[in-house]
Length: 220
Image (cartoon, rainbow, N blue to C red):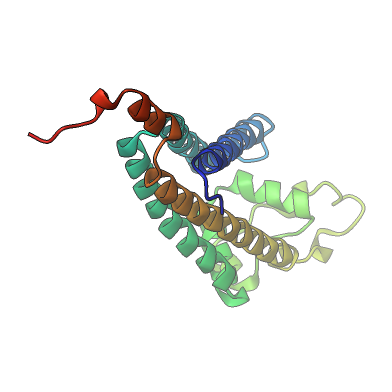
């Protein structure tokens, strides 16, 4: 880790610039997904947008604190970053620790709560019909007659969507957990850099005191 004042300052600025870029990427993904109808769930889009905006705001606070060597800004930035680390690390560990049985239960709950239009979209995308026998007894799947290739292949030959989605769901959990774990460790680096940077003296300030000794602070 950087030992000098300038190195710590530049490293902290570079880290926050990276966070700003990631924030804009999250916002872009949410906007594109909504515009291209890749994501039809508004709470998901809103959650991604909120994460991007919050990350940018935190990064701006860090950039301003690093540029001005402002003790109060850097303190609040460090506290917020620590809280964000705790949340993100916990969520990442939870995603990596979810087994296939738990993934199945979560997928079943999601299938029972979405509307028929979303189920039809999933069936068309993955060429499957229904979810699994247990869920389909309680929640009737939308008609599989609308599948794109139903004219070529009998509808009864399509498997349940759980069989098709199991690999995708597992990959999504592992990917989210891995990315979250990686960024949580970058937040630890940011906390350590901020702590070190706050405790360092600005060389320019020390030079000014040496040139103008009358500017020293007196205790009354």
